[in-house]
Length: 372
Ligand SMILES: Cc1ncc(COP(=O)(O)O)c(C=O)c1O
Image (cartoon, rainbow, N blue to C red; front, side, top):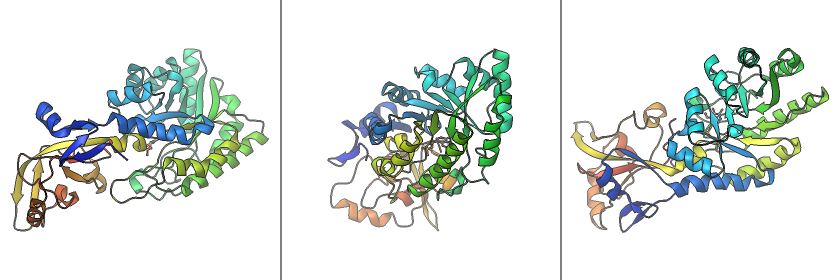
């Protein structure tokens, strides 16, 4: 669900006609619906309310300051992956105790800054990173909180570029290594082992991979308990899929329905790190047609936005709907649709029955403007 709708053949974002914005600010530009953004955050919060989780919006999905401000104001925490993201998170007023820090490649300087700001914890991806955080905390004369990112080795059934929970991926620590780290935790004098983390991938439309991964985590938590090792947090990452084309992803309620009982059984404080689910449906890219280039083989629509503005189609062959800001009045659409035969790339994703194929016309690449 989103708030981009036609009224009298004009595309609106909530109550604002998008063509009016295009006249004012000129193309290309991104446009976000505040209502859509917040409603997705609230849907997730409502679905999981029985657990009062900490929702840390994964700002790598889109770190626009206005988006971050709106979510933080609504109560969200943030999942960050760099010193730059830490800077932005603090700039928008995020409580450091609602910041979790993932990334396989944190630098010493970034670690130092995050410890100094007393973030909730680092999601630690390797033994060497753990050693470095311990050393930096020692230098600073404090203790740093960490959650081990477990690689549960499950197949999330999504695009290989965004699969992160298999042992062939660079993310996380396998269960046996993690167990040994916990057993030898006394060696890490300046670390507090606060929890466990997992993130098995992105654009996951089904609950089954999560159930599998969470069951593995629960088994692991039991193993830790047997050794009298107590943790406080279980962070289940993000990954909830959204609709780009004709996907049928689970809703927040369906997702919660499947995993709530499992999560409850842990007795731990739960953290979620959604990105795409919150921001994806709330953004569009508005561009203008510059040229229509006809070739013997096919015709190309050249617009004033490129892959630097929206990389997903060229990176993954990802689908984004294309809609005109103004639809043709009834009757003309049929005639014009014939002209579009053979158009490719942008136009390949176009909605049939619309009339926008003229230079100077604006169109919007609908939905799911996430950075990856
Ligand atoms: C550690 C971590 N958490 C959360 C996310 C957010 O994923 P999504 O946008 O699919 O919800 C990502 C995405 O790559 C991630 O790497």
